[in-house]
Image (tube, rainbow, N blue to C red; front, side, top):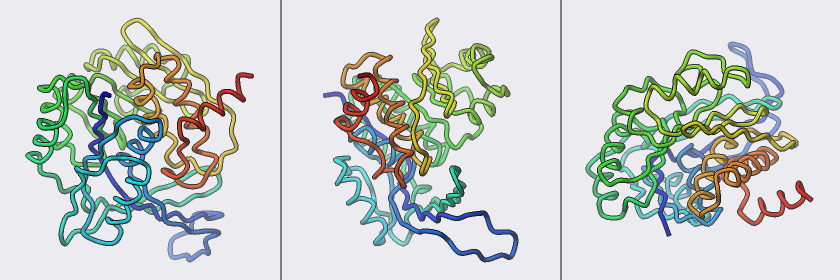
Length: 306
């Protein structure tokens, strides 16, 4: 089976459910509080592993109880953690998520996520990856590590997928070597200067084409997603769902889409399953725990289509 290597962030999320954001100097009571594993990299790895893809997480946590818990939780979702390092005298990455109504606001502290040795990543990929495998990255780790990892993966002939979140300034050295670029509305605006919607999606894709990525997905939240490869554009509508927590929906979409492709499903089916998975994720509080398994998506689609 082909392998998915996810190089990215591993966090512990501290979730506060609130009625309103506090004003300056104000203390407010929270409606609920919970701690749940997160980080874009870890979330996407979990999403892929829950579909049955062979998924390896490459990343760092602190040499603390949070780090140990994060590793154990990934293992419980069948993510392979052989390449996660615990960094001494460094805290694990954390995120404070404020859930207000149907929206979220997030504050992060990178901790061990910002400490990477490119020589370690090079050895992992050289010793374990082949040209049939995929390297998936996001931008919650240092940008120079992303750029160097792309070069290593490119030399191996791997497929390179970048979820440009949170958006940073990306130069030609990064973009020209991306096989699949995944963006949401705000990230598309940052890259193309277009407030993208269904009336100007072609214009946004034309600009992205000039930057180098061979294939691109633009997700538009409740307005669905667009997939572009050469002259083909595929639109996928969302499934209606009761919104509880939008955290992790985009990560679910990405991991499920890649895993579905790895399991030899066609692009249209992979997009449909990814969209269903994202819709299901937002119906439950949290990220990794909320992402559905392959069997759960099968049942959901069976209900929707029959």
